[in-house]
Length: 536
Ligand code: G6Q
Image 1 (cartoon, rainbow, N blue to C red):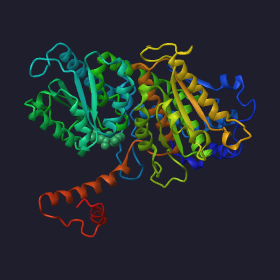
Image 2 (cartoon, helix red, strand yellow):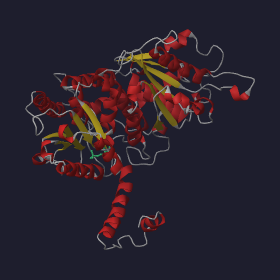
Image 3 (tube, protein in one colour):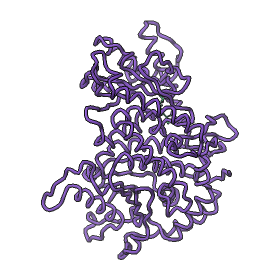
Image 4 (cartoon, rainbow, N blue to C red):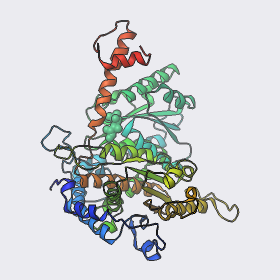
């Protein structure tokens, strides 16, 4: 494998030239039927309509060349086969395999990386037994009653993905089972969740790969105290998911323990036991397997080298076109699906923690833009909020719309001749067109310049299977972009500095609590800041 700098790729020079005259979506007849039908792709159960991007045949050809030159698909396959891709060549780095895909490569007789998949299968078998014990009344609370709620305690990658999937699939939760999440060290997070809960019927799933995260350990401690205060035995209620050998890897403290492995990055861990335990509890074991099946199907579809037939690759390259060549700094992901309310928050982490990097795979400063700012909210709510800027603002924001032909509940009715689902989809299509086409008007305040690139990702219905596919689609898109930008998308050194400073400030607070002011920091700006904020 070669790690070529983005700026030196031949196709990048071609694309720079093409970017001087991108296709205009705003002109009369700019979106003829053959363009709309020609610019669509399908992977698994999703269709991508991308006629409303500022691309033409030449751009698509050059984007394909870029993907080929950067060996994006080859690297993706190498990733799935266990190549050590989480590394910065020539420098100290995590030096790990990147094998979240192995968690769902469990349906094949010849998995891409057999060892990791064997480990995933062991964890799945343990989960299956645990869930069956709950169903069969082998595991009950102190009074012999079934558990009805699972609280997942974790933060970052140990929270966002599982939480987004839980909201996405609430419709499919088993009767009498629910989940909630505590992430923040803000005591109000735990207080609010615990206020509405019968702890005697609750399981607490503490998830931390490192087993040493301040927020998670603090919340675990707080909850343990709550159990004791209510006369309950925490050991009969608290589970753990952690890395093998981590400080939390102590089965004697927990009702059950599950493992995840260092080759699975936190933000890519939703299909490991990090998501599996809570999702298995609410969806049932089969429901969780369906999610894995959908993710696995997308992982296979992403091996296609023709970007016109590979949605994750196509979305990655369209993103690069908008970001690096047309110069748009952010990306809005706007799901027209209430169930996906937390999905943009998950993508914020998955994308920005992966691709918010300034050095190349070889440790050199990059001379090109890497990951965009990613944000989003479900439509149609967003239309009544920030779409003004999307349509008429000076900042052009490329949009990835997501929608489904059918609603999840199927509980709908006609109001004034159309169903709510039709109204939702009409708005989705209208926004895509309005952003692209714009509108001329004599009154400048009512004119829309158009040419605001977007694409429509459409599925049939959001189910455990399609949710899995959607999750993997974005994970794979993010990896493809990282391969093209020649960065390491799988580490997160950028979060360390703030963490270290917080630890120093906390030790200052702790010193005060003990009445023995430490002067560890002395003239450090931390001290001035503590004083200026009137916190000490
Ligand atoms: C994700 C990051 C980060 C991590 C959290 C929680 O890729 O590594 O968000 O998931 O910091 O870490 P633990 O699971 O170790 O508690």
